[in-house]
Image (tube, rainbow, N blue to C red):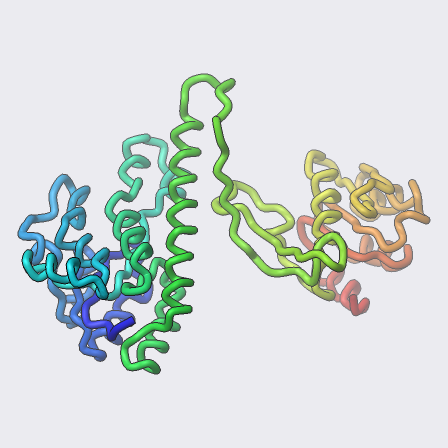
Length: 351
């Protein structure tokens, strides 16, 4: 791409935006902005041209309409190597926009915390996704940033490459935009379809939204790939959200067994223990305390329990840890919590 000369910045999440704008201003990039973002940048002493001064229209309808204008979208969508496009921009006095920085209204978070439908509906972003998709479609000519975590590497690359971004970076940023906007639309779809009257209404399609936590050594078998994903905005935790205190990197099969072990015990109020091997239960017990529950569960099939996964719905204390260590080799333990004494004892086992 050519050198970035003009950037449009309009963000809901303002984390890091002032630092980004300062870097762009240092590179002599003209900055265009809207409403609250413009105010934040001006307060930091960064020169900003407001979108309304370009469109000749004020922000209206409580901010519902501000960037939905040909001056903005032609500046994003024009093909720089198409003479007819560039002639059209010149005819209408429109300047190209080389960098777009936008993040979206927090629809999912609002849907989880607000009860009034009108509050949730107001968090359906229109202008943001429209600009993002326009810029991403024209990624050969426009850099598009929808994630604050990318600000630092973008400014680093611009500094290194005299104000330009590589083709690889431009394509990766555009791909992220379409992932983010498709997930966003899926969340809105799920909310609206889920609120239809009648609990028996089943959706025509289901939009799933999972974020990769990490790659795994391999999949179910050594020749397969595997990765761990966490459902975005999930209401409760599971194995993907658990904290690993000790031991080697977990495998795909470890996670399957951990999930099975956790699901077996989580429905019980009294102390419960499960023993799982290759997703099959080897033992299960409910008792007055975790140590007794483990001992009884292990006795169900001590041979199959070797190298298995242990699940608890309660804390693992020193007494329970001592019983586990005395039982032979155990691959993993998942529990509501571990006492400091238990962790110290269990960490004597390297893996």
